[in-house]
Structure formats: structure tokens, C-alpha cells
Length: 516
Image (cartoon, rainbow, N blue to C red; front, side, top):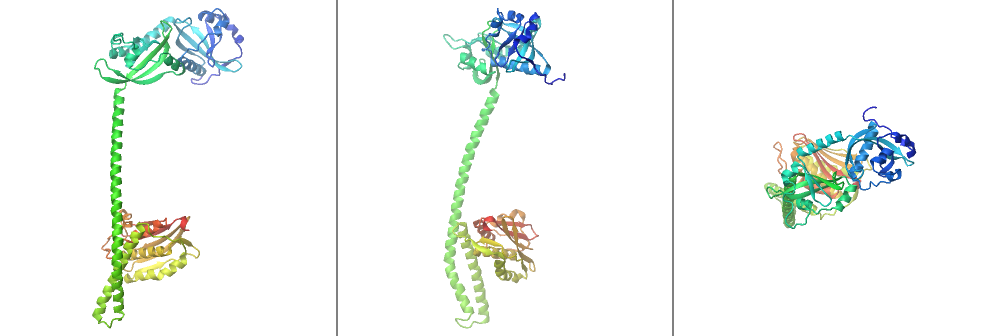
């Protein structure tokens, strides 16, 4: 048989099928794992279990066996199913007297319900059993784990050297005058559950808990983790509680420190978050005040500025009499600078209104081919002063964009003005339309100085200008791209910029599906 292979358990339909085992002088019995009872046993088994009849044998009560015993029987079945049989050392109480034995387990399936069972063959080997017990005792003596045993009343029965080294010799410093607490309660500071603990251990292989105990040598509190298992006293055959424990003080203190650090960090994070929230509120308040101030000042400036522009224009047309050539040149300069200043003021008002979301965005159906062909002449004029080539690639008919026509016209004019400002003489500027799944994209491309990649996001903010290769922004205050970005956000779209220094720019208005 290959090691680890599975052996099919033999099926026994009824106890009578095992009569041939009655001829053996060694005790053999079948233990049903499902009902946790003896299913069959031979005559030698009746003698071993100290019963006078077969009926008394199969009626024996094993209900008080702990979960550990039941689990051990299950493991014996599984191991014998793989290997054919297993040998193991057990302590059994046939007449409430402990007997150390060597048992052989073989897997079976029994009865009409085909329940799992083990055929147990008794091999009494007291000498070998005694050697095993001595080896286990020697192992417990040198174990760093503290091992103690208590009876069902919580009285300390025995302990290994590790426990004795910590708690002191058996019977030392346990009782204190008329103190009625049990040894268990006195040592661990825990209420001894007695019958309740015994009941719990019938359904669970062990109880695990942590206890704060007093170090008798230093008087300081330390933490121990306890594992409690139920066994049977080999002397009295009564219930026995075996407790293994180890010092986990360092671990508990580390966890407490970690918890303390975590709490401190949470407090710091809350404080920083509150500070940031307050700073953000102050910044937003200051920004709102700035926006309101700019809007107010712009309104106040626009009225007299319109008068200056109107009167200068009227004077240039000779409404107030003929001007000399030098007077006309100076007045023309005043008129142009006035219009530039008005453009700046209008930008400030636009930026203020868009930022405060006070601008109503219409949803006009814009036929892009017609819209761009009407705007083309205006955009060409912007490029003429520097002899820049302008191309508008008109899209096919029938492409409809739902957006605010006035604001989209303003956005394209701003982008072309910006491109012309940063593109050298005789450079090229173009507009292209691209349709993509669930998107419409309007591209403004130029052969200008470009934008450093690390500044692309910053140019979308107000009052930001890029100066590259000696081409300084001589006009405006850096509101063009900011206004375009605000217009696109109001449409639910995006202003996308692709650029590198010295390689021109591709500035794109991206309209989502809702605008198609």
C-alpha cells in the first residue's frame, strides 16, 4: 500500500458477523463514532470492561467523554483509513480505574446506516506504556510552558517545574487565612466555572483565555495566556483540568502601545483635519471676497471706460471737429488701450460669474459645420497681425452639439487668441473636430512654444501665464484658459491640454454624451 493512500473501510452489517473474534483471548470491540458507544465486543472485551453480559457492554455510557477524546477517536479513524491500522497509547477507565494501554485501531462501516466505527484491538503493554509516560513526564519537566492540573473544585493538584518556578512550590502562597476562594481563582483572578467549564469542554477541545496574574517574585502584574483542557485524573478517575500557560506580557504591552499610538495618531489626524477644514473655509471665504471685490470694481470701472471708448471713437470720426494727424494717432492709442482694458474687465466679470456659478448655461442645438464656418473669419483676423496661418477643418454636416453657443464661441476665441499669443510669426494654428464614442472633441492646435508638462494643470487656474523662449504674455492677466476651463466644467465637459516645451500644443474641448 502506498503511504498516504486511502483504505476503504470494511463494512459489517450486523454484530453477529464478528462472532469469530469471540475465539480470541485478547479484548476486541467495535466503537461507533456516530453514537459514541460500543457497537459490539467479544467475551474478552466484556472481561476488560468489567461487565457481566453483552447487553451491559453495549449499554455502557460514554456521554461524559470530552471533546478531546471524541476528536482523538475521529483522528484514529482517519489515520487508519489511510494506513490500514494505527497503534496508539491510551489511558482507559474500565472500572473508574486508569489503565495504560496500547491499542490498535482499524476502520469499519457498520449497520444499516453505514456509520463510521473503529475496531479496537487491546494490546496490553504496561512496560512500554510506562516508558511513554516517563518520557512525557520528562518532556513536561523541561518545557518552558507552565503546566498545572486542577480538580473539578479548582484545587491545584500538580504543576511542572516551569509553573513551580513562577508560582512557587505546591501549596505556597495559595491560601490566605479564611479565604474561601479556590486555588484556581486565587492564582488567576478568574471565577472558577466548575461544572459549567466541564460542560463547555465536553463540546469544545479547549478553552482559551488571557489572565492578568501577579508575579509572586516582583509583585507586578503580568499577562498569561491559558489553554484549558479536560482530562481524567489517573488516581481518582474524576474530572481533571489541565492548564498550559505562557507569558504574553511583552505582546500585550506592545499591543497597548500600538493602541495608544493609534489613538494619538487619530487625535492628531482629527486636529489636522480640523485645521485644514478651517484653513479651507478661510481660503474659500477670502476667494469669495476677492471674487466679489473684482466683480464690484469691474462694474465700477466699466461705466466710465465705456464713456472713454465712446467719446474717443466719436472724436476719431470727427463728430467734434477735425483732428490733426498727431492728435488722431494719440486718440487712436487711447481708444485701443481702452478697448483692451474693457476686454480685461469683461474677462474679470466672466471669471467671477462662472466661478460663483451665477451664469446660466443654455442648451442650444449647434450644427458644428455651420457654426465654425461663421466663426472662421473672426478667428482668421486674430492670426493676421503675426502673419500666422489659420486652418479650420470643417466637419461633415449633421453633427449636432447641445451647448451654450455664446459660451462655446467665447471659448474658441479665447483659445485661438492664446495660441496666437504664444506662437511665433508665420506659425500655424488650426481647429479640428473629432467625433468619438459618446464624445465630441474640438481641437485647437498650434506650432507655438508649448507648455512645460509640469505646468499644464496650473495654466487652468486664474491669473497664471507661461513665459517660454522669450515670448512673454504682454497682454491680459492669465484668465483666458481659466475661463475656458470654467465654461467646460459648467457644461459637464473637460478642458484637456497636451503639450511639451518647444513642440506646440493641442488644447481640446471634450464634450460628453449629454451634450451630443
